[in-house]
Image (cartoon, rainbow, N blue to C red; front, side, top):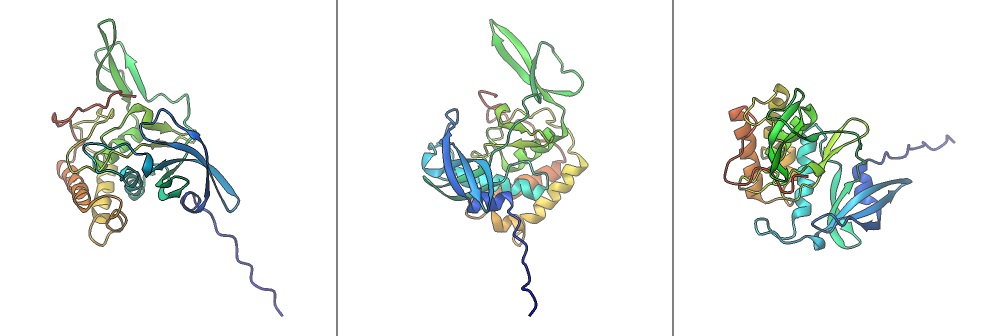
Length: 272
């Protein structure tokens, strides 16, 4: 009799780990505006740190429906994955110790990465993009700038697609391996234009060729038989999916990074 065939163990992906693993709460991140719990997730011999945001801990917002900020975070991850840029950490919707919520892989940020700065100048130096002037006390102002970094430029395109209403400096996580992640996407996908961001340095400039190709792929994925058209229902509303299609079409039609509308504060406060 021949020996039974040995089946190799299944490779556990970060999404598998977050979806199927056991969550153990380690503490609360008190700086967060909604309940955000630091957890350990364990599954099939693998363990990682993650953030769990239960729906029950979401604060009501006047301009977003109650109880679906977690779904918007997962939707932003889905769009990020569809771009191929991998700008949002793996994120899932699952049950946890305090009910259904968003669960996202923890990213250890590189502390020496400088993406934002305040400079005493009228114009940014080479390698930097101007955001605007900010008060720094005693009647003084300084120029707020962000790095002219291709990773940030990709994130600016993603934010325009998902209509991010809160892209602060503290939501930028440069990882030790050189990748850049954006987090906190609960206030996204509104049908109204609510883009608020620190990444205005490319406003009005032509999109890169890479960005145009990515937007074409997103447009296809949002078609009725596309991957995003299958993934997004249940995470955001049908009207918000239609609005996402419209934003992708508008970006492709203009071929440029969006500019502040003037109808909504362009920069979130506090900016970091």
